[in-house]
Image (cartoon, rainbow, N blue to C red; front, side, top):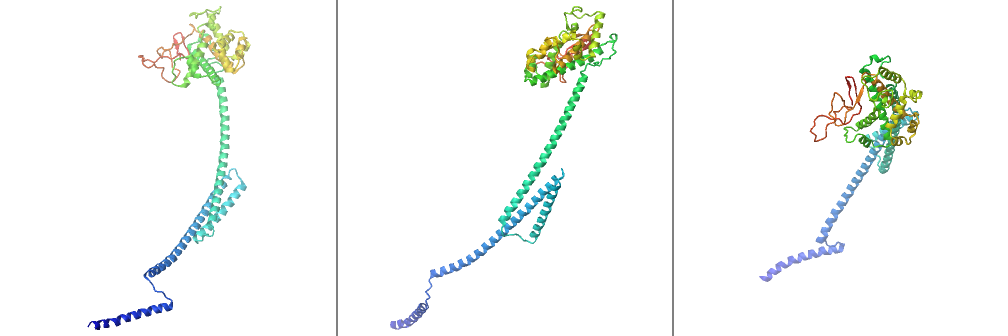
Length: 454
């Protein structure tokens, strides 16, 4: 039984072996090697790699095409904006050449505008037909950038020329306004000279001693104060030119005064000039040593003395100071001018303002300088002298008064030189009434009439 079974199985196996051997012999004869499992895997990967390579090459080609197209579009837009910039620059030049009218400049700008409009029309057609130059976009970009920079440079040049013309126009306007200002200043000086001239001082020429009243004294006093302020203004200007410290000078004249406005310090200088010029006003002719006239004001003056003062007033009020001094260099008024100048203008002050003492030396020698400074002083001195003559033409004579510092402010005898309230007492003081800082212009009494001090 066992041998029969082994014989039955053996023939099947031998046939399978023979078939396998034949296949091997055929592969060997044809040169085809047997395919292993690894070889099969590598073969599949190779096929897959070839397909991927072909797909990548096609995608790379598409990307390059897109980049070239994008560069061409950018170059096209650069050319478009460069042409627009050129049109703007040419139009700006066309406007600039209109005034002043420049024929050659207008024609050149017009030709450039027409040329660029043609270029823009060509670019429009290229855009509609999708005809973009893809040959050399880099070169096109550079040329367009260069063209746009030239247009910008041209615009800046035109703007510079416009600004230059505007500067010239403004310079001419400034020159014109300076001339008008100079003319206005000259007119103001003429008007000021008329106001400060040796005219009638608003007093009637036919005024008589018998009709004299306090109303005639007020306009003469106002003209006197105007002349004082004109002289003070001249002194302050000279001090500023000489480099003086005006605050320190004002504090030296009126120490301890606080000014709410820096312009108010001029009142300190005005106060000093008034004190010097009105010193001795209570004496007839400012001279207590006059033998023919009393030293102190007399409430019942001699009628002849009263008439003499009025005649001096009428004589000098209608004459110019320089003419009177030249005609009567030894008169009482001439001596008054000399003494007041030497009293008011200190030698150090004159030397600082003018660098010498020439004017003072001339006054000491009995002569009178022909300078603007002395002319302003002489006009002021004449007004004060005339006011004194008029004051002693009244019966009783007008008297002068001033208020001491720290006194209570009274509207009956005083008025403020500023629009602000009078000076208030220092902090901590119990007094609530305003007080006086200092007297700028003295006041006057003519009988029962009071002319307020300032």
